[in-house]
Image (tube, rainbow, N blue to C red; front, side, top):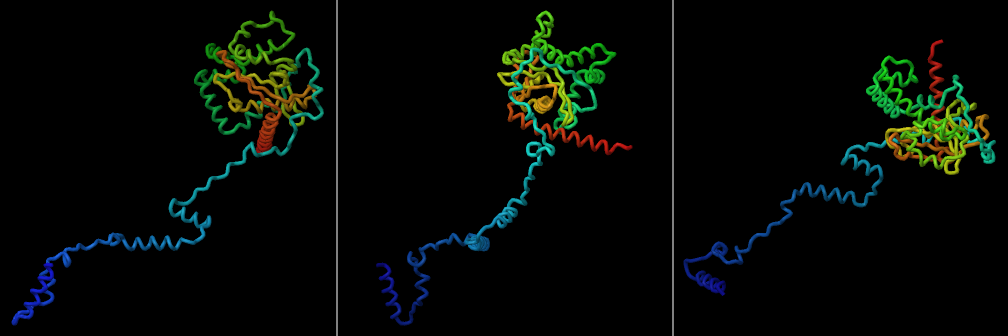
Length: 358
């Protein structure tokens, strides 16, 4: 309404003489909301970096529809995260390697009927010292770097406890020693295993009587530790008896061959200061057992065949010993590893002989 009145006044003034109003004056003079009250809208896209936005859009649109390949993805990953460091394949170890010269652990010429005869007196064949390597020597000469490391740590610990002279005494079967105190400590450590085996031999030998046994040996913590194992041991066939593998050329001295829970086994008695509840805690002991087993199965001094093994770890404090039973399949697996170690030992000796000057 006001606008109409204003326009009427303007027309009347134009018609008057000597007075004119320019059209631009209307715009300048007007204060209505129609002409100047409306606020200008702000475009949010004006604040965006147009160059970066256009590059992003172009990148997305250009990659749309392109088929990605492993090579293109690797290239993009290399740009974003750096070059890929590929994991090196594990070195072929004893678990995958097979012996070059295979020889069976079991003797096909001996069957289960040969196990029927149960000798009243266990065999005890003396060990003949000769140039043939022993099982212990082969294992010692083919230890891994990790085993060498732990052996060296044990050696240093023993030297700290016994001293240089005491350790030499310990490793040389206790010859004459000038220091009586060191000698006694070393002898006690060395004789722990020896007395333990003597006590077991006394218990397992049927011809022995209680009067002939050393009661002090039978009261040791080690014997107490294996009491629950001895209840399942019967039918002793051999005690502290030597074996020789003429084909593979090695010898050994096994602890015991007897039935454990009805299975004829090569039994290896061990002592330990630390618990060894798992078979892998016994390190090379399974290889030692199967080496004795394979030699005995092909030794003409024995008429029976053994297909199982048993490692018994006894403890000085009398806590229950850990028995580790090895069935036929497990023995066969460790036999393959033993053959590898035997081949490694043979190869080392061959190289040493080549390097020796004539």
